[in-house]
Length: 322
Image 1 (cartoon, rainbow, N blue to C red):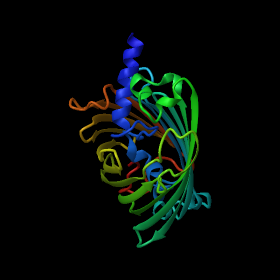
Image 2 (image 1 turned 90 degrees about the vertical axis):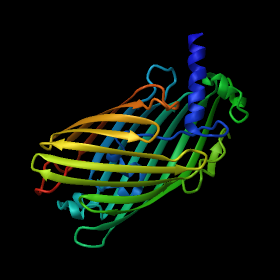
Image 3 (image 1 turned 120 degrees about the horizontal axis):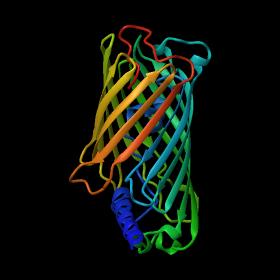
Image 4 (image 1 turned 90 degrees about the horizontal axis):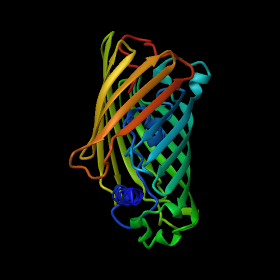
């Protein structure tokens, strides 16, 4: 009985979380520490922090069977760093990345691979215009044995009850960004083709494009104290718009503490460490009292390895994180 109740609750939550119409295999990928993964959301920001391997694990709605879990790893390579360039203001003239993401939610398992390329145009001594594009391939698997009562009654996916189904989607991402060592503003679109290139079982009708705006500012107040602030806005058809922001304080270039908020949804606290070429982060996110979309706390762990340089200032006003 407990299992049935949990499946019913999960089905309702996934339905509310994913869309406002028929149930479909579509979920938004939330990342509390979004400012550390700019290149995933906007291909133009690929290589903005140089050549880095990074990843995160996000465990959502803890305690509910089949609750969303997300795993991500990416590798960004800047050709300038490969050639020996050390000036961070000149990084990103040409860069590429490979991003791998797995998202599990309820009866669905989604695997995504995205390959991005970005090019930088220098506007002034400290300002750059970055343009990026990416190709994404998604493989979505539906386990009809794990459908909740709510999902089983849906006319689109209910017919797959008791069987396994697969759907593959090919699409494209584009983006542009104005960047500076201390601030950036970017605009990107995921799935510009609306998921219309697909094959396999038809348990979803397209995958609407999503527009994303990201911006950030950082400043070194002293040799031992730096601050960063980031904002993120997302808009997609049939889903409510989402706005979130975070602010962090970096102490002695080694430890940061911060907080973030997703309007009307959740608040999070963050802590992280820099050591050598490694960056480690943790975020604990909890829903707002009036939010019915996310009933339990979220744990999110992130890691980043800088391939060519250490997390050390090259100048007095440099800030080491976003």
